[in-house]
Length: 308
Image (cartoon, rainbow, N blue to C red):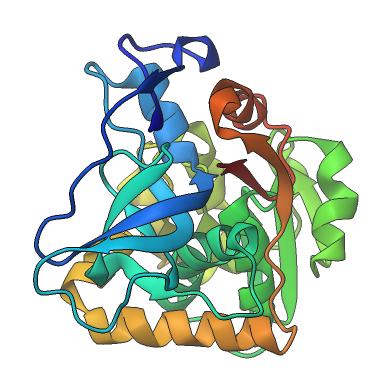
């Protein structure tokens, strides 16, 4: 089968394809013949920054080809999507059933990849922010796969004012089309407007400081990015504000019932047209470097997906 990997850290140019044997599923695993693979910012960052090469994981969607020992609830031929922590940029990938979700008949593989993992992160971030009716919410990385869903979910949670923070002005029409009331730029924090009750931050790094300073008294910042960064405790203290770290893997492993309930919510919202996964475009698996470049250059509007 075809697989994408790399041997030295770097940009999109270090990715290459190779032919390797099809993996064998272990206990509790599904071997999935991939149709679509989601590209995530954490993986793009790790390719450039990690000291040692990592397996290119992420979301996949496709058809179950082989069942591992002890698997119940799935059959060969089922359409599924799921999160892969091993090699996911491949024609076949191993998905543990704890990270798998059936794909409804009406949904395509590309939409499934764009909706489930990104939607679960967005859903969890909104939950962690405890948005109350009428509150104001700032969403950073609002044009990303996660951010574009967080905008919609914040509104559905009752936010009275939803503002999108983006890297480039030419993304404004896109995020307004998803329901943003206003659009602000990362490099103009002085123009971010009135303080916010909740900030959902998918960027981190140098943007974390301005994001905290944008909080209203008693505000909550939810940090769910892989970008790191640090916050002065004084900035939280003077606002009586709080900062919450959110990681979807912790929910999947520690609160599986809640994780499954969120998945069902996402599919139901999708089915009735209340939640729209945004896909920037699809790129062939063999051109994975081009997909990474779209994200590194901050040109994507929504999810970037590899097709197999």
